[in-house]
Amino acid sequence: MTLLTDESIELQELIIRTDNVINDTVTLISEHIKPESDKILSMLSVSQITILDRYYSSSYAYERKPEFKKVITRVDSFQSSLESTIDYLSTIDSLVDPNYENKIETISDKNDFILSKLNKLFGDRQYSISTLLKLNDIKQRDREGREIAEDLSRRGYVILNERYGDLDYVKISIKGASYIERKEKQKARNPTPTQLDHKIDNIIEHLTKLGLGQEIVFNEIEELKDLQHKLSKKTWSQLLKGKLIDLAFDKLIDIETVTSIYEYLTNSNLKLLK
View (cartoon, rainbow, N blue to C red):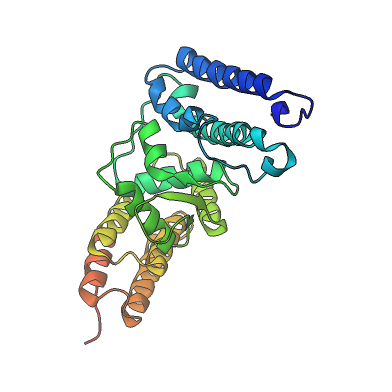
């Protein structure tokens, strides 16, 4: 903001102009983002900071007189909050298409949705998973955002802001960006999900609930989803069998799980040497 670079400005004028900028922004959001503009305004909570609060700006506080410190920090905080809010707004599909209806229900759907949005926001800023879901009217249970954050972190797809605790702020990793870009390209080539796609998504969700959702397991299963369009059914089934047996030998999943996955995906019995 130019307010922060104008060294000739007096304190009282800075306070008035800061208030005007914040109030104008709040009014703009209230009048033009409907319904539920309060969801957006809640992310601008720093607008409630006053010059009576004891905040200090790392960027500008020591470049100006002491009496300017709190006001400058208020402007600095509001600017950062506004930039973050604009990023969140860019992820709301219904703002672009008023007739948009999300069809996101499963955990797998939510994971891909989150990764897709984070990839579009690719950078150093962290974003709340629960907020991304809430703004897009996607149902979630209590603490689901944190659970999703931990799950995606274990798989190497996101970087957690806090390893421990309840916060669900993350940014996408290089691995996560590569995964979702590959998946979106595959979806563009095959826009209608196959029955096998649905089955594989069901397996991933089931393994997650069982606590077997280790990164290597997910990666192997996701790779199989991509290869279904490149290999014959017989070759694909043989590859599936080999991958599952390797996972069992590495003790990542047990033989019973291997058998049930194979039979569910291929509709045929898995014959193993005793």
